[in-house]
Length: 213
Image (cartoon, rainbow, N blue to C red; front, top):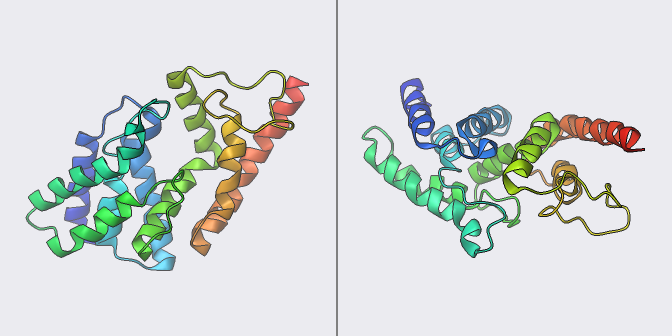
């Protein structure tokens, strides 16, 4: 991808993405971009689609603990904003906008969407890598403060005798999402990265078990 265009897209993302939710701030989108580019080097894909999709996939983020269905609209509304941005950039190839929008709309962990295109697979994998390893631990407890949920269930912290409820307890997210990431990857490249990061989660839980016992 043309370096000038890439830098322009990065600058726009930095300006447009708010810092209200540090789990979905510009730094998150930039890390997703770097993940996606790393995966793309091995797996292929069109960077003119992957780069803007990665940078703009979280332009709009609604609270995860929202009682309304609006929280499920984040990807659709982000896609609409991304479309406006890309149409306004003279040098961006307009025929590729639709695939950028597909990738953004399909970038959701919880919806379990099967990607239509390679670029969408890569973006899903790049975003899911933010849900494993050390960075996922940081993001989990950042969101916990915003959602005002407990760190863990004091009677059963590690979900041994109950179904995880990540709306109530931060640690439950490990069992409903973080520990599952490595088997949900589409590409071999992302799967290898996720397997390496998975070890950090296991280490964290082992050390926490010792402390709580």
